[in-house]
Image (cartoon, rainbow, N blue to C red; front, top):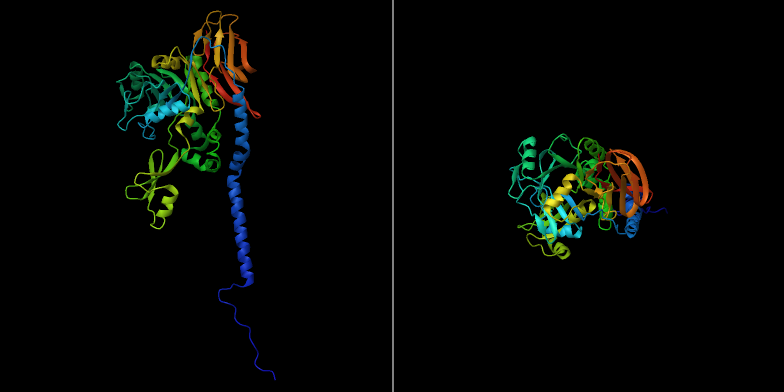
Length: 459
């Protein structure tokens, strides 16, 4: 009557209960959402930069360049555009050969380049080891970055100095050899009373990165999202993220000039050593290097992966570079900031002599080409240009001319006297003093530094 009771078939062993499956799907969804939010937080600034800030800046820079007009008054001086403090394959932390440097100078439209190699491991700084003189119409000037911040350049061919020499003696040897002493990296302690000192960097590109991030490695970590999203399209704008007006350098410069003339230049500190490459070794392994050059790691490639890798990157031949990414190409470092010199001709004695007295100005050339800018005093005779000294006379007129309209700030012995906007500005000099001028460009809602001119000295 009742019969045996039927039981349902057992559930497959692989099937999870529905509540467990639902919990798993919800957990997976929550983890995906959290990962997406974390990625968005990590990339949010870089996304804004890539799609809003950098395009807006790029349009503003293009607008400034479109406003450029030649300056017709040259104050009686030819102008040469250059850069200082550049490293070559002779430095331990650079591998750029001189032919590549010459090509980078061409792309940056430089007339001259002052080298700043590190000394050899034994301390030698051989002023005959570097390229110097005119090459394809461009001038290279031998120079070294030595101990205690020495940027030593212009010594006679055949001169060899030692980085192990005590600094007082080294400075005297450099000057006796016909060289000129500037200080690099003025953020570090320096003997500012050194009698042989002729000038200083009032801006240094590498100092910006050090002060913003602490080190190149920290800069890469901090700016990795921008490098991933924007380096290919907006490399100049990514590089400018570290920029800060060098107020402390400028204050130091003004203080020094109250006591004696100290010329101001820019330090490009070009290395081309912030990048990575993947190289096939002689044993068929892969070696990851940075472009310092320094080996980071080496690893093998499984046999099953080699065909796919070869199809994607090409033959895995020993010595072949499978990829290279360079975040600080040489010509970008040279274009970032330039030092413009007024000299009679493009020769080493003339360029070195002009740099020594400060017949020069510094310009952030990524924003706009500053060629043609002039800063001088009219005293009734020939114009007295930046870096030169003349007696102050009643009625002395100070004039600044620029190829792009901007805001001019007149400084006297480090204090702001006046401001004016336009393509030109003129003031009556109220008395003796060191008169220098700064020019800023309007980029969006901000006034951005463009030009720092060496002072005209009225006594």
